[in-house]
Image 1: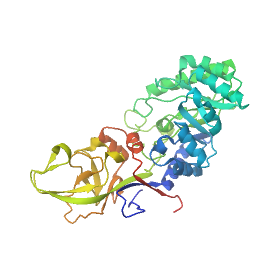
Image 2: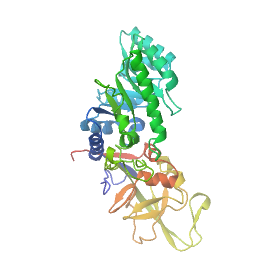
Image 3: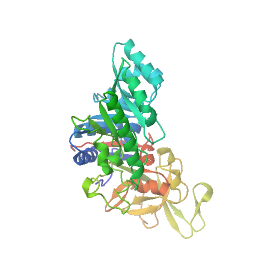
Length: 405
């Protein structure tokens, strides 16, 4: 549980606290729910969902992850520069011209087309090396990867390229977090069919991965891929939002809102690893008829007080929260008044006649017994928790709370 905010300087206008102990605990809680043979390929793209890629990866490594998944080579480079030697898989398509850097960083790229694979093969053979790759199979996401109807032929051809080794095959679910199970089950069926045909052709691959956070929690089948007798391939899951503690939007296992007993009593007790705070910069008195912020979208109907917080949309605090969001102030909710500005947010401080500049408001996190999650903020802003966390701006100060503090 994240309680009072930690400040490294009294002048910080807005900052986040990232608790590595909580993050590591979330990783361990997820591991306990999965088969012992299942590895964790933790997703750390988008600066580890706004938590900071290096500290988040450090905490996850201590908790026993197998490797890390990124979206870009720049993200992979940050891991390598920070000394991480674990496998790094790039889930997004890479261009043929990036092959040399893939080899230099020892990244496992996603293969989505033969032209890309041939370019990577040529680059690997030129250096006398073999590049591990993971084949991306589109089973219904309609995004990256080869369609499942074309994937077997593609993977068979890629497996014959001397400079490449098909070290894994993966897919991505479109709606594993929704209440209905049908679409995800159909995607699993298609993925299983691809695996079965590859097996029939004698094409050997390494690890398999399909499950994001939602699927790892809701579909036991997704963490037991390819078990057809004998020694099954190593199976990975790709947790992201759950290990950061913002998985509250994942639907339960059935339409009645129950978790299936066969797969556990419910999701692990994930806790948010991140909290976000801003300081009161000034307090302003409003008379009846006074308007607040751009376009005067809020007008006081009675004498009021507003607190000016040092956070705005340039920091990633959504403009969509104008006149509809809220923050925690002295342990109670204070509604936002007027339009969120680039650098400021105004909130109702009328209940606090003695409020002074320098006090702390909490945007995400807890004050006493009252809390607001990233999911709550997203609901008010008409978005999703992912967009809130990954949208936190670079000028927001990051405080990392070490696990052993």
